[in-house]
Image (cartoon, rainbow, N blue to C red; front, side, top):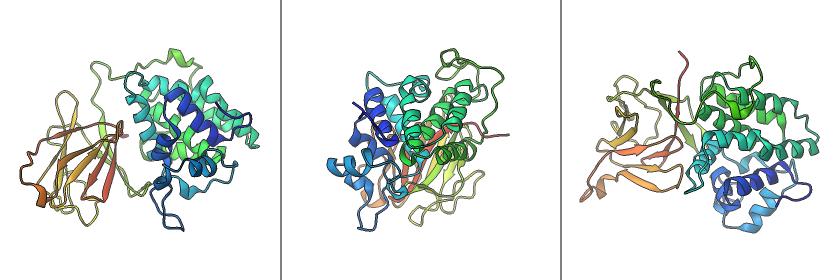
Length: 326
């Protein structure tokens, strides 16, 4: 149960536990930074320390939380949305994720922000446009809504939270929030969850991250059987070369099947490739380092929105589906 005077961060953890069945420890592992603090330890390395998580994160006084405690809020949101959808037997749809943020469950965040002397008008304006969502898919709206919710919980600052959400919308999804033509109740949203028959397949977007921070511009992969190559010296059209020094010249290839499923395969890299499931955090080896190739049978591995790709052990990409602007 939430305390009688919860902070925005307390609300964030409480709502995710009560409505999303994500424990405090689990949520901390999704949103805390892997970058070391002044004592040499990273916040995410402390998730097993219940006292530290409770005292310095969940129940810390509003305004006392350090930015260094958290990874990029966009990355956190993608991880959380993926986890909410994947809960076995009780996973949420994108529409339910959006309702969690915009509906009665999420109203506690506004109350906590008001208690921190924040004007929530701007916050509510964003929620209203996400509810209408005539220019966005339900998946996109759920992701942006979660960015707003997490940023508000971690910063206790409406203006900063809205700024993060709008930056995510612009830089990751290539969109801007439009003024609603008319008010539509959330349960009458015109778009249903999941792909609609006859619609164009979404593109794949790769966002490189280091210690919870976005590095460089997002890379788009269009849904073709040829796909794109990732490599330090890849020269093919659309190749992704924003990689670390351990990534091979021609490291991996990503492509889309006729059924709209995305896959990644290794190209004989020296340092290997791993897919980290966004829903279960399971590590799936696409290709091991060259010294461990013996006996390994390479095969394409399916990837989905919310997954993370780890190349050469230190070059990481978040996988996201969407549609770039023309």
